Length: 409
Image (tube, rainbow, N blue to C red; front, side, top):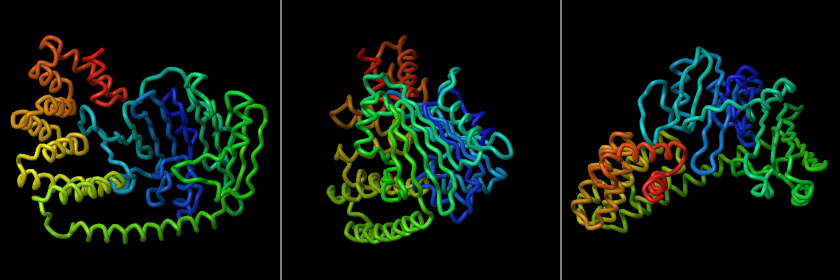
């Protein structure tokens, strides 16, 4: 774990280190509920021996994250397991991808280490949270998981937000022991947090009912929290998850029957098309990558058929084009439909904006060409405008926000 911590990029705002190999396979998956590591760290079949991640926050837009996995051996089977069960789409090694919508990049560093990067991690010289995680790992060689987080916000924005938090998970006789510290901005905020009961919610799940022998102590500006989580309670929670999943499957089957998804859709019924589209998009949003791709493909097929049956319905045409660009990242098809829509429908400006979003997926040259052709900016300035827009996008802004910032300063 120390070796992985040393290999993390500098300047992190949050880091997590874990040693999944210290748990029996049967219990590894139970830790997902209380762990601050990504769920893929506890995939028993993947055989992760050590895990490390560094995260860099942005004031706006998506965060940057680098994850390192130390595996017993990196094989094609392991890569396939990551693709199938990691919960994220991955772009391996040198696979090309330009513009927005690129999935996380995965690289095999050697026979044991896989590196996964979400968004471009900035190059920073100053040490950050990763250095503190390395110190914690050296001081706690028996820890199962360690984490450290800091806030880079201005002091007047830190109402109720800890300046620094640390968490340590260690194995106990019948489960795991959790020790946390949260340094608040002042003793007054520390007292307020103590009165409210500072039990954090992680991964959308409240730990309160899982905590055994909970002890909370306030010392000056710091809140110290200690508690145990028993294997028996984690197993019961996992069983509850199985029952909940079964109930959700039954509800989904009823919904499919009501919407007639097992029958050819009535593509001439606008209401019916929109109801089915809402189903596919809702399930795609909650699905893992392979299933998500299937749900989005179903949504695309539905809209293709509906637009063919109702060619004058601009609303359906817009939905199809936006699906291609925003969800499927099919830049070529999205641009073609956007150009067609600008010629066929009256809302020309909206369709041209969609074409620019699609062109941004193809990179700077394509976006500059589209900006010049649409006379959004003078031809001699188009390349600089496109470059500045994409730089803002890569820094975390949405395309529309980035374009407004550049064209309407």
